[in-house]
Image (cartoon, rainbow, N blue to C red; front, side):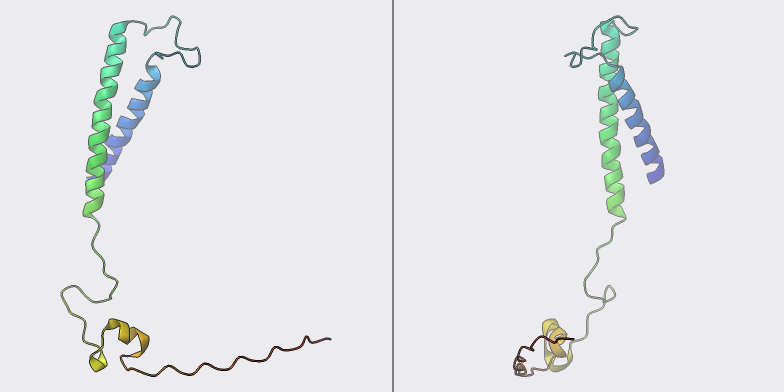
Length: 125
């Protein structure tokens, strides 16, 4: 289903780019808007403008459908490795998860830091 919508979306994009390139420039930004051509009638310009607007609407709808389909494939994830529907067993000692991560739930006094070593003189070879 998603592949079909992606193909339709890409066909709409390519067609819309072609229609925009076929339209006559109103401002003549680079000086190429004037001159004779096979699309000089106002009726043709109205058809191209209307077709571009319709394709823009189809592009918007297919974009929304693709984003909804992509959202359906996502599943919520947890940072705790527990199967869904099961509770984590309480850590030993009745602590919380943070206590368990710190050191197994036991309260241990902090160890005294080692005294800093004296700087060593440079060694010559």
